Amino acid sequence: MILNYIRYLRNIDLIPMVKKNQELYNVDLTSNDILNWQLDQFNYNWQNIQQNVSYFFNLIENQKLPRSFSSWQEFQELMPIMTRKVIQNHYDQLIDQSKKTDLFLTTGGSTSEPISLPSWNSEVKYDEANRWYARSWYNVTPADKLFLIWGHSHLLGNGVQGWVNSRKRMIKDRLLGYYRISAYNLTTEALEEAGQKLIDFKANYILAYSGVLDRFARVNAHRKSEFHQLKLKVAIGTSECFPRTDSIQVISDTFGCPVAMEYGAVETGNIAHQTPQNIFHVFWRDYLIEVKKNKYQPDQHEILLTTLYPKCFPLIRYEIGDMLITNELRSPFVHTFDKIIGRTNDFIILDDGSSISIATSAFMQAIKGIKRITDYQIIQSKDCTIKLNYVSSSPLIPEEIKEIRRRLQEINPRLEKTLIENVEALEMTVAGKNKRLIREK
Image (cartoon, rainbow, N blue to C red; front, side, top):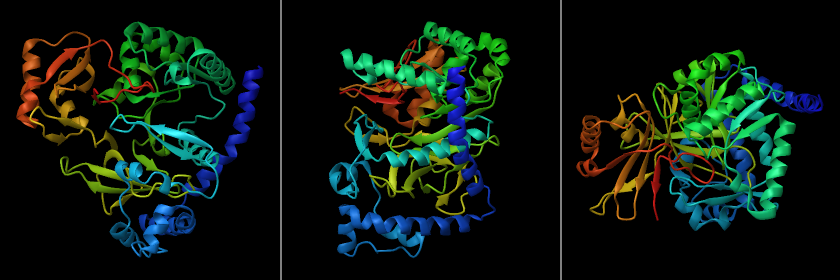
């Protein structure tokens, strides 16, 4: 009863935030109207950024950037792209010095080299408002019980401090109505046990890394009649794209509820969320998404992100490393899109010393058609050997392996040497996430 009351109070506290977002977004605006609003909002923030962020102050002083932008076209022509290299080379100069840093957000990115970006506590409210606004599309409220497959306990530290942090998180989860399962152990046995815990907990909705959610559903498909009795509101995938073309169908069939994906990153918060109509809605009051064509995948577009609210580390034309697909691209700025693809700036090094840029979808095409493969991962060793690990209900037969190698050879002749191995579970990052490409050091 006490825990229910605490969630009830939290719901009362957050619902006004949800209603405000509903009012702000449920307006009849054209794309041009939105872009004009976004330009005004950016210029408003730009006045503070140019005073407090030395990197941009210096660009203005050197007359490389204006004090105000007259159009998004001018913005594209003059504003440099913020790559990971730019962040590494100008880290201190990119921090807003107007007030002290409250915390650091660590992102591994595509290179597996973590970067910690400073943040203010005040930034959380924007992410929280967007998250609960999107979940309201599926009738989820802050009072609902969440079954969460996320992270791993070793992130909390070791020894006494690790134990204390673990207890704190456990208490906080209980107060919030969360049941948390480690995403680091994805063996069949562990996921079957998690399926029983979902039933016992009587959750209202599920949130997990997209690849984990897919595997969780497949391992527990035999329990779908029990899951359907829970009347789950939605199963939400996050942090990575779904691994298979039938992932959404399988997840929905297993859990008896709609499936949605939220799109964001550690350093940004939620940028967009899939609606019940299967379209990604960008939280355009807080984010500007600019796209450019990917030279290796012409039908896909790389994302450049600009934040439109005050940040300790302003992200402007930030090369986040993801791609999206949209059927209607009338300008380089999008407010809705059809599909998120995932990391684009991964690369593998061939044994001749050259490097090629690939999207994970290239390897997905190589295994396409083998339905019992549920997930995969590319491992690049120190000596440039490439290995394709896959998760399957049974090992591939020689003819199937031969066909995969043939398809890889079409991508690049040297990929025909790729090692192919059946594994029970893929290697995870320290956050419990499945990286498509891991380069051993």
